[in-house]
Structure formats: C-alpha cells, structure tokens
Length: 320
Ligand code: ADP
Ligand code: MG
Image 1: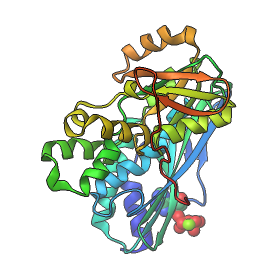
Image 2 (image 1 turned 60 degrees about the vertical axis):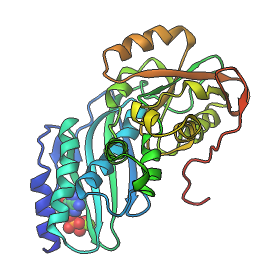
Image 3 (image 1 turned 45 degrees about the horizontal axis):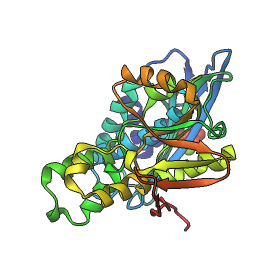
C-alpha cells in the first residue's frame, strides 16, 4: 500500500457525517465550525508501542485506546467531543493492521459522534498521536485550578484494574483466565467518562482524568488549585474482580498509584454532594467520595480509622 491508499482507507473506514465539518480529510487542513458562545477544547496524546500499551495488544484495542485517552481529557474539561486528528507512524504499510486499528478507533468515534478530520501518515516505529477537539459553553469548562479547602473529593467508576492487568500480564499463570480477561478489558478499552464530564459542568470545582495514578493526578489538582487533599485509602472504589484477584494491600496500591484508569477525579462544594449523588444516579457510572480538600499543599492518605498511610505515589513518569 502506498501512503495515499492508506489515507484513502482511513478516510473510508472512519466516515462519519457532521455538518460542522466544512472540509475534512483531503485538503491541507480541516475547516470546522465553532458555534458562537462555545470554546474550542483541544488536547493531544501519543501512544508508543511498548510504553503506553504492551506490544502484543490487539490492533483494534490500540485504535480504541488511542482515541479513548484523548476523549478522557475532553471529559475532564467538561467538553463535548466533536472532531479528532490522527498522526499514524507505522513500521510498514500493513493494511490488515490499519483496518483493525481503524475498527477500534471508529467504534469509539461513532459512540460519541466524533469525526476524523485529518492527520498524518509516516513510516517509523509504531506510534500513534491523536488530537481530540471538543466544545464547551463559555465559562463552563472545568479546570484543575478551582478546588477550595472544604470541597469534597470524588472519583468515578473503580480504580486500579488497568494497573493490576499490567502486573498480572507479567505472571499470567498466577491468575485465573477470567480475571485476567476482565482486568485486561479495563487496560485495553478504557471508557472515557464523557457523560460524567458533561453532567459536572457547573457542579465540579476542579476535575482531572486519571492517567498517571490517583495520588499523582490529584497532586496536580492540588498544585494548580493551591490547596492540599486528605484521602481515605479504604474509601477508594475497586471492582469485584480486583477484590477477588488481589489482597487488600495490593488493591490499595493499584487503586492509589496505578495508572491508566481513565476515570475522573473531581472536587465539589460540600453543599453540592447531594446533587452529585443525584446526577450520578442516572449516569450508569458511580461517583464515590474519597476525601476532602484542605488548606496547605500535597496529598495525605489515611485509612478508615484515620491512621496516616505512606503509599507509593509516583504514578507514571516518562522522565523520572
Ligand atoms: P500534507 O502533505 O499537505 O500534509 P498529506 O498528504 O499528509 O497532506 O495528507 C493529505 C490529507 O489526508 C490531509 O487532509 C490529511 O489531514 C489527511 N491525512 C493524512 N494522514 C491521515 C491520517 N492518518 N488520518 C486522517 N487523515 C489523514
Ligand atoms: Mg502531511
């Protein structure tokens, strides 16, 4: 396959009509309509084989995840996804790989009506850079900077499955195949919390998506907001599978420091906690209260009895 055949394949496999796309794939750049009163929300994330996903990951899952991690960033801002761009670096023009990759990518794109409007195709070690573009009404974007002392801290869904999957993959014989499959699903197919992000507009004071591990990412919120946080390690929500597959101390480590969760961690005024519960009762994903924002700086962790805990907290860093 030549470059232009590949681009043609990408174009056909991801076709999705949006009337705010004036010009999509095929010109030097895309032309997109941003409605009056809305802000454009833009983010980008790269996935490198062997770093962001195990090299043996199914191409379909790589496609899904490359878009999912970007939509997760939009979710954290309270944005509605609209468009995406895809810079694909491939060792060779492997049509089968690209087809399967695009099936995963397009499956998620269709779920949120995201149109692929451009990109770049080059040769090199497998690496995928996706940019996602979304919309948020002026003044309703949720940032990392709005947390205040006294706010409650929440997370969506459950934590730690993806990190547990990475761990279990290193010793697959030690784990029941059904557990491994369930954990692996969370690692390979994160579900971006778009509905949660939209529902949190006007409610959350700050929000971040969890890619590097809860303690590290909540630390970013604290730093940007100029506050500290106190977290109850025993309140961290974990899945049934994680409960069955690992003892309590391991679960706690995965949930507090493991990466790749792609859940949202957000803060809200204490007076809004009932509203948070109401909103999430119809969302099909839980929000669990895990602690509170305090004056000062840094994230402190304690157990259910209030005893301080010293948990690993580094999260993922590319340049440690
Ligand atoms: P240029 O040389 O002007 O950068 P290209 O030949 O790289 O243009 O791309 C031609 C068109 O195909 C452009 O509209 C570009 O956005 C699109 N495109 C190229 N690669 C991809 C890709 N991997 N995914 C989506 N669109 C792509
Ligand atoms: Mg180009």
